[in-house]
Image 1: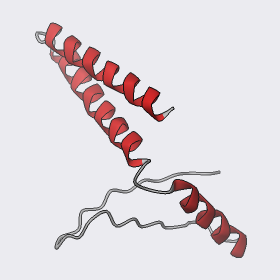
Image 2 (image 1 turned 90 degrees about the vertical axis):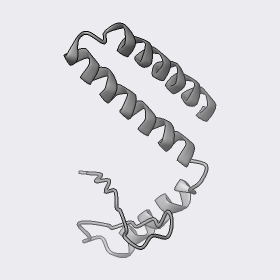
Image 3 (image 1 turned 135 degrees about the horizontal axis):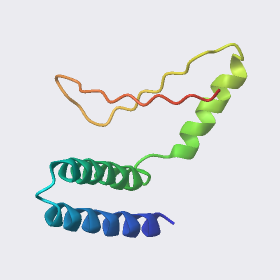
Length: 97
C-alpha cells in the first residue's frame, strides 16, 4: 500500500511539473500547479514518515489517555524530530467531534 501511494504521488508530481511548464504563460495556473506540487511533496513526506514512527503505539497511547480521563477536551502530542537551539514547530489539529 505504501509503495502504491508513493508511486501515485510521484506520477502526480511528474504530471504537475509538466503542466506547470505547459501553462507557464498563465499566472493563475502557475500558482495552482506550484501549490499542487507543494502539497504532493508534503504527502510524499508523510507517506515516508510512516516508517519512522510507530503510529499504532501513538494511537494506543492516545486511546489510553482518553480512557483514564473521559472529561478531556484536548490531548497534546509532541514529537521531537531533532535537536535544535531555536525550535520550529508544526501544528496539526484534528477534530474528532
